[in-house]
Image 1 (spheres, rainbow over the protein chains, first blue to last red):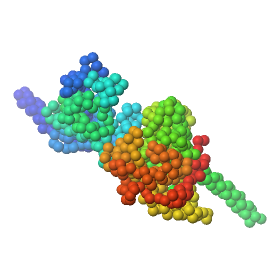
Image 2: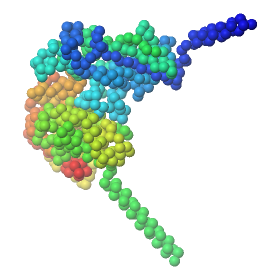
Image 3: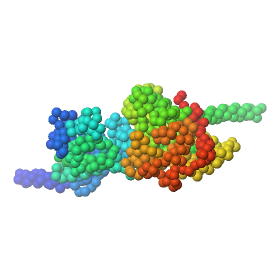
Image 4: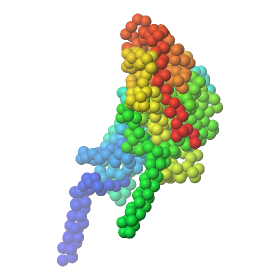
Length: 274
Length: 347
């Protein structure tokens, strides 16, 4: 008799375990949202990112010294895809984030997505053209031209998607470099394609496969965090590698298109905290 | 007796009603909101997102004339956009902002902006609500941040009240600031020149013989770019000016498209009497100099407008007599009402 009870108990335990295993993923329900964060952890090659480290600067692929004094970029239009291929686009109004490298509290893009297991993350580096031409009422928070971030071009209506400034000893002191002698570089990359005629478009859509480094298991009772490494040296060392000395200042110009291509190579999925 | 009594009541009612009506009329006379002139096309500005109200317009006017919009509180919008000069900076080829820093372009008029698709001599801005951000933040103009402007305004209780009256909330936001400025600028309508009165058949006003002939010359030789009744088609064109010392390439700076090199916005021909000097860099001090350019100085720079290449020599063929008549017609486009309109002046 005792044996039977033990058997039933074991069976019950086994059965529960089975049940749990056979249905680990909640049903995909767009009304059943749970928290998910994407962490933009800025690094410089093999080192963590420290600002203004002119004493021990980083080195780019051309052998030039690099230190960073300012790093800001917009992340928007986040979309996730489950392991079974279901896509979810975060509500547009809640999908704009300004990452400021100097302010660690801005490194998370906090969103809500349906409970589920996600193996793909898609986002835009920059601001889509639709939002870039919306009335001011629709541009609040980080999109407010008065937000003080300096990420808006007043003279040529539009947002600066990516802004990085710093110093390099390679920069000359003449007109082609930095005539103030401070050896500063400035990269202000923007351009959404233009209001009336088709102009440069530096909006970059980035898609990352999370399968190898860990899928995101989003549940209501926990905080899943997709941890990305964002390598700022890729700005110089990406597939359109360039020398800081030759291009110390790039803003709204043709060359920005070349640099923007490098920007899309900065993002690498390191791991996921579930 | 009863009839008399009713008659009395009736009269009193009528009297009260009349009084009430006249009060309403009084208000209507003081502020009519945005009214499209009869001879103008439908405006381009999206009024549904920012209807012009009395409180909004008055707030916009106060802001327009408030030097707090500049970094050191010395320059207002009205400093370089002077009403008596049809809201341009009379006598200045290019304007000077705070600390007398010189810009690179001639201050354009604040006039009939509700019909403008693009702003600035070189484009780049396509929404009136976004336009003031450029002069406020430009180093050579007001050199201030929007954030600081909002903070300055928030510290003044009367402004909070005015924003509340205008927008139903005392939140002084970017959108409210810009919408108020737009409401004032949208009301800067110039539509009462002699030309307009002739076109609208008002008060038996007609062109003189010279003006009429000038009108014909205008229609034949100028109207393809300076289209009636706004006297601009709102496009960007290269009118053959020799590139200036800083080699300003105009629209190209904002688009980086080769086809836009040396193109500037076609300016309106209204109120030329008050808006000298002329062109994007104010290089011509008189209208005679402008006409001399078109008749003999047009340069074959990249993207020169095809309309100026149709004859030899390049430009527009005008005899001295034709020039005089054309100038007589252009003089009918000057709008005294506009530059003297008290509602648009600093209060």
